[in-house]
Length: 120
View 1 (cartoon, rainbow, N blue to C red):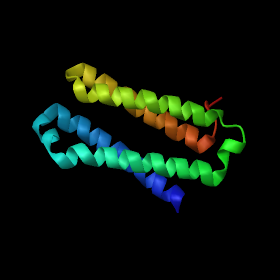
View 2 (view 1 turned 45 degrees about the horizontal axis):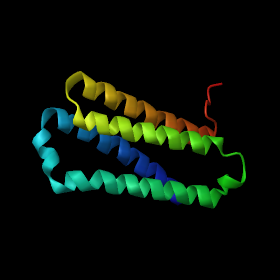
View 3 (view 1 turned 180 degrees about the vertical axis):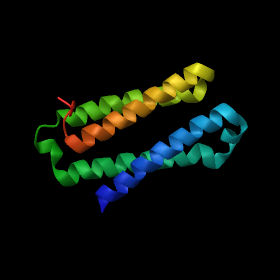
C-alpha cells in the first residue's frame, strides 16, 4: 500500500512541477494564490515521508545503501534546479526545469533498479 501511495505521489510531483513551471512562464500572477504555494510543498513532504517509510519497511539501511545516498544527492539537485526554474525567466527557466525533470527521472530509475547506474 505504501509503495503505491509513493508511486502516486511521484506522478503528482511530476504533474505539479511541470504545471507550476508552465504557469510561472505564462501566467505568473496565478502563483500568488495560497493553494498553489502550499500544495506542491505538501505533496513533496508526503512523498518524502512515504519514501522514508519504504526505507524503514524494506530495511534497506541494513544492506548496501549507496543508491539511497545517490537519491538523496540527486534530490538536493532537483530542489535547487526547481527553485531556479521558479525564479528565472525564459531560456534559463526551461533549462533549469529540464534539469530538474531529468533528476526526477534519474531518481525513479534508481528507485526501481536499486543501482546508481542501472544501464551499466
